[in-house]
Length: 157
Image (cartoon, rainbow, N blue to C red; front, side, top):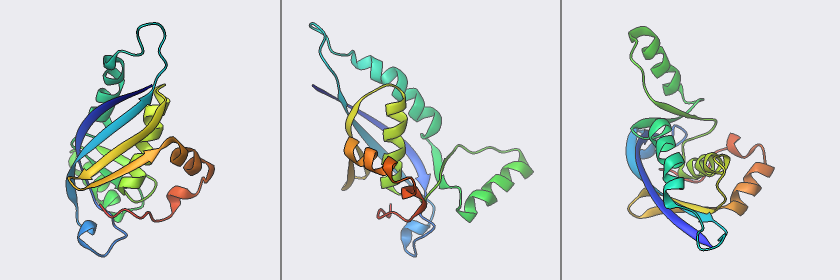
């Protein structure tokens, strides 16, 4: 059985590897749709709140109103230097690769799986018209290829 839950968060990012508008720092209202595989035990499967109790705080703490940034992006060190000099702090979600929607889906899928949930797939909406669907098979394949996140991804976002 599949239980579907939807979440949203706001975050800034850029793709420093591109030579188009997405190289500029910009933000999105991301939509996340999780498709959880659950088994019925008697009359009950899972309480919807069990998902929310773990996922919503995680998104708020690590993603919402933060900046998704590649640790290799020169902007990252510039902003870290600003923090050291001024005492101001930013909320960073640091990636080992460009902050494409594909890499975001990979990260979210892994983090939600580590919470103990079994995902069939997730959908990550970057804009009103751009959505990626990321499945368990994608995640398994990506984890087999340990170098996957070291290269450029397709998404521009």
